[in-house]
Length: 177
Image 1 (cartoon, helix red, strand yellow):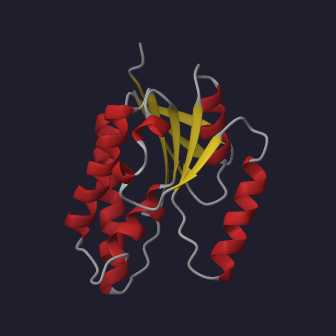
Image 2 (image 1 turned 45 degrees about the vertical axis):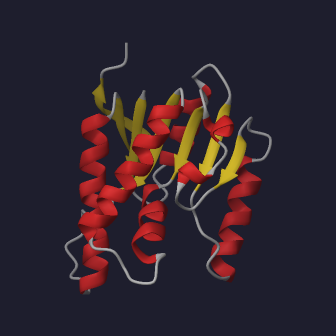
C-alpha cells in the first residue's frame, strides 16, 4: 500500500503522516532523507531526531539508493519517508553533474517502487511547492518541475492521498480496502 501526504511548509503534514503510520499495525521505520549539508541542516536534523524520539519509530537515515540498505531493515515494515523534496534534491544535485528533471523523476520513482516492493506500507511526505507564481533560475525551475512530476506519479500510484493545510486533512483519494 502507498499513502501520499502533501502540504506546504509548517502545514501539519509530518504530524499527520506520523499519526497515519501509527494507525497501521506492525513495525515502523522513519526513513529520513535530509542530507547534513552544513551547520543549519545538521541542526535541523538534530531537532527532527529529538522530535521523533520515543515515538516508536526505528530511524534510518538514507539519502538515496535505498537498495544499498539491508533489505531485512525494510521488509514488511511500515515506512514513513520524509521527504520527497530532500530525496529529489539529493538525487538531482548529489552527483558530479545535476540530473535533468526527467532523470530525477525517474530515479525517485525507481527508489519508491523498490520500497513499495519490499515494505508492508509506504507513507510518503512531500511539499506543495507549485502554488507561487515566482520566476526562478533554470536549475531551480527544473527541480520544481521534477517535484511536480514526482507528485503526480506518486498520486497516481497511491491508495490514499491527503493534502494537509493548517493542520486539517483534505482526503484527495482513498482506495484502501
